[in-house]
Image 1 (cartoon, helix red, strand yellow):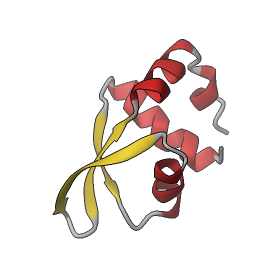
Image 2 (image 1 turned 90 degrees about the vertical axis):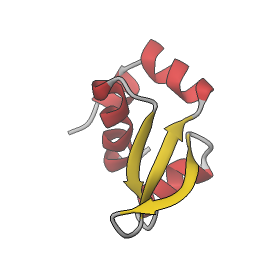
Image 3 (image 1 turned 30 degrees about the horizontal axis):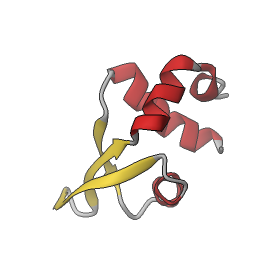
Image 4 (image 1 turned 180 degrees about the horizontal axis):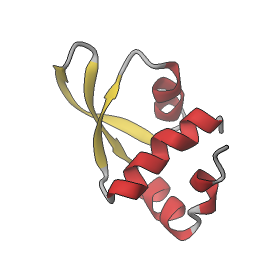
Length: 74
């Protein structure tokens, strides 16, 4: 996982939320979605290309049990 992908997931953890508005045109967001870590939870776009993404159950459980996987950002 890239540092920026970790940063994106870190935002979910730090805020204690499972849903965030992210840019659907961002390659890192697309990669996290392709990997099954996050998913687009609405078809409604706000602020141009931003829409709501949720963390999958397994990924949420994993990053909360092993926060070091997202906090090892430089």
